[in-house]
Length: 433
Image 1 (cartoon, helix red, strand yellow):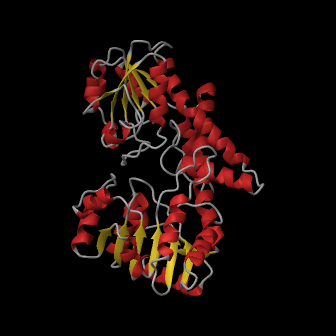
Image 2 (cartoon, one colour):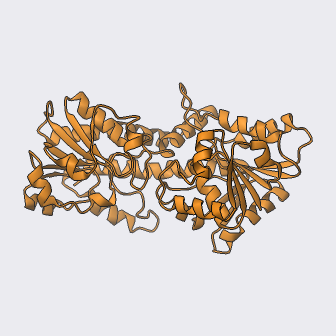
Image 3 (cartoon, helix red, strand yellow):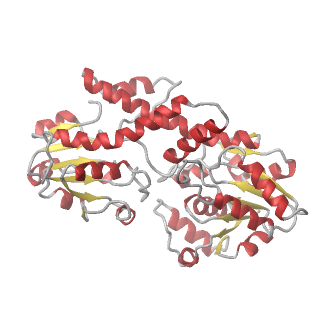
C-alpha cells in the first residue's frame, strides 16, 4: 500500500517508520525544511529507543522517504494520515485543530482517485465530520473517505506499542475506506492484534476516554499515597494489593510526582472542554486534573520539608527532568514545577537527565546542568530523584553519602528501599511510605 504521513513529529515519524517496516511504501511530509533535510541525512529530531535504526533501515530500502512537497506526497497515496499537532489552545484549553484543518484543505487539492483520509492526530469528537466537510468543499468531485485511527503509543516504548498493540481502533462507515484500513494493518492482524471497528465519533472519543482513565489511576494512587503517609501505610503494598485484582490491574499504580507529557495533560483538558460544550460534565476527570496540577508543586514542598523547611541558600540535586524515562519530552513534566518551587524558596538547583537537557533548557532556567548524576550530587545539601531512569536505580549510595553535605534522599519514584537507605544513615523520604 502507498501511505502518506502528514506531519513528521512523534506520531507521524514512528507510525511512518513502522508502516514502512511492514513493507508499505511510506512518504512522510512536513513543512519544516530543516527537519526534512535532517531526516534525509538520518538525523532523528526526537529521542525514541530504536527509532533511528528503524528509519535508517527503511530509508535505505527505499520504503521510507521524506519531502516538503505535500502535493507530490499525496497524489498517488491509498491512504493519507493526518498526524499533526493538536496542542491545547491558549485561553480556553480546547484542542487547537488549525493544523488538522489546514492539512485537510491541502490534501483535498492533491488527492487523485479514491483516497482514505485518516485522522491519526488526537482530536475531539466531531473532528472527522469537519475534515470531511472541508475536503468536500475544497474539492467537490474528490473520491474519499475519512476515518479515525487514534494512536496509543507510549513514549519510550512506541515502536513495540505500534508493532504489538493491545488493539487497533478504526472508526468509519465507508466500506471501501474500512477495507483499505484493514489491508494497511493486515500485518498486525496476522500477529493476532485485534482490530476494533466502530463509528468515527466513537473512535475519536475512545482515545480521550482511554487517556482520562489512565490519568485517573495515577491521580487516585497519588492521593492514596498521601493517605498512607498520614496513617502509617505503604502505598507500594497497597498498590500491589489492589493491582493483583484482575478488574483493576497493576499498571499506572506507581505513586509519584504526577503525570506529564504530550497526552494526559492535553487530552484530559480537551475532554473536559468537549464535555462542557455538550452539557455532559465529567466530574471525575475534573478532580483528576485538579489533583495532578496541585501535586507537582507539592513535591517541591516535600523536598523543602525534608530539609527542615528551609532551603534558602542551599543546593538541591535533582536527577531526572523528563516526564518519564526513555524520552526527551519535557512537556508538562513535574520537574518544571518542582524546580520553580525550590527556586521560589531560595534554593540553588543542580540537575542531570540522560536525554532531556536540550529540551529542559527551553523551560528550566537558572539551574546548573550537569553531565552525570554524581556531578549533580557533589556538594549538594540534598538529593531528589524525580524521573526513574534506569541509571538512577543502582547509584552507589555509600559514595553518594560522602558527596552530600546532608544525608537527605527524597525519592519521588520509590526506587530505593527505605530500610537500606536508613541503614546507611540517610534521612529517607519516599512517596506514600
